[in-house]
Length: 544
Image (cartoon, rainbow, N blue to C red; front, side, top):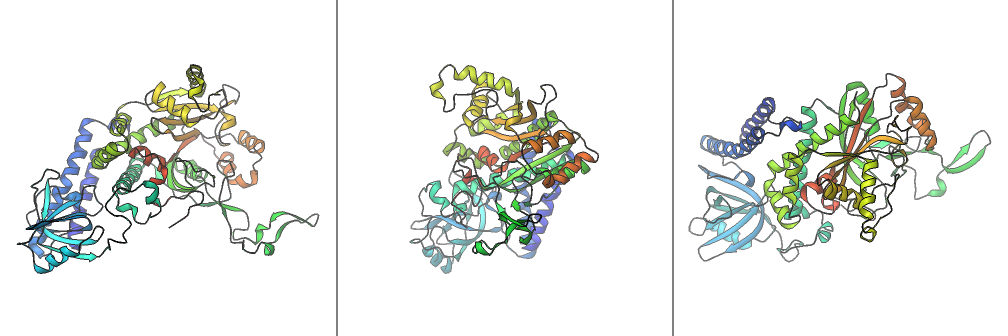
């Protein structure tokens, strides 16, 4: 069994590396040619063929029956194979039984046909014990399916139950459950079609992100989760402490040593890090340190925000993709973001068609069309000032249709504004850039042409969601950055290392952040971000 996995995996990885060397997975928008897409489709079809041939060879030479994933069961096998998974349905007739088994590798699973005259006594007894949710091991050859739902089925010669599942207590009976209910059993919800499909799309997106940046010459940097700096300057951070909060009276107060006077707040010299520490809201500042030495880098990992929000767009724990590019301006960041998004969405379109078809049918009828458009059409670009003018003109026609009709320079665009721009005004993905300084973070570079009234920042708005990416050229001028910290009442001592990047060999640099779970919701056409992550964290909920 181990030998089979090693051989098959080696064959597949060799094909992947060869494809990358040939340019089949080139990251830039120009790579999305018909030839490139055809080569990827050929590779996916060939994967199942490789498994079938390897299975036959290993089986005949060693006598070991190979295990296959249901996603690879696309053509008849030359010998018996083993499928392991969980039972979805059982149908028994006079002469045979049908058992639908799903191992999580695809949406459809595989139908196992068990003719009573071809199976042993033990298998007959096992069939009588089967219930939805139990785990099984089924053996037999893959043959051409007699029905029209799938190309092949497993003509089983034996079936063994590996783990029982009492039907009377199993929370996932064979019926449709609400997504809200499924969150209460998050440990079991990956067995449902929706959450399993989300997981597969999520995995493909994550792999494509790494593939894009690795093949584009970026270095992957793991930035710290614990920090003393507030990247966004918003103060919505989770505190990290080992002080005993169950005994507040025992926590020493901070002290003014000069006046020998007790101050408000704890004495953090007694805490683990000897200073206030928090869970990070962003890896950007740390990523900048490496960009200013290594050129192009990216970080991709967990971030946290203590925002008391119950909306469908926010989580307390989420993942951020944050590339940083040295010797780059805002235009470079927008170019990179567009190429990256086209690349990763194309990977999902190519590799997850079955799951996208499911989402297109049950959640968003326009999903596949919208994703294809992202890949094939260029993104629009519009200044913030022009965007405000467009909105004012549209809102003036009928202000009652808008929840937030008051829009002027300095307004932080609401979701309804973002979606109108992307869905109605431009009917495409659109970069809005040059935002007012007053509504953006301290590290964004002030524009010289308007006296610093705006900053060199951008948001990417996409149809169906609104903001998906936010980025900027970073402020590389030491004096300007110090003044902004002072104006925002941020302690420069907390950012001494960040200021050092401007003192010693400062360079123009830019980057952006992409909320990964928001990308997952966009690619799946689902509304609530709590379905985009395995165990959602939000106010009042930290189960599992």
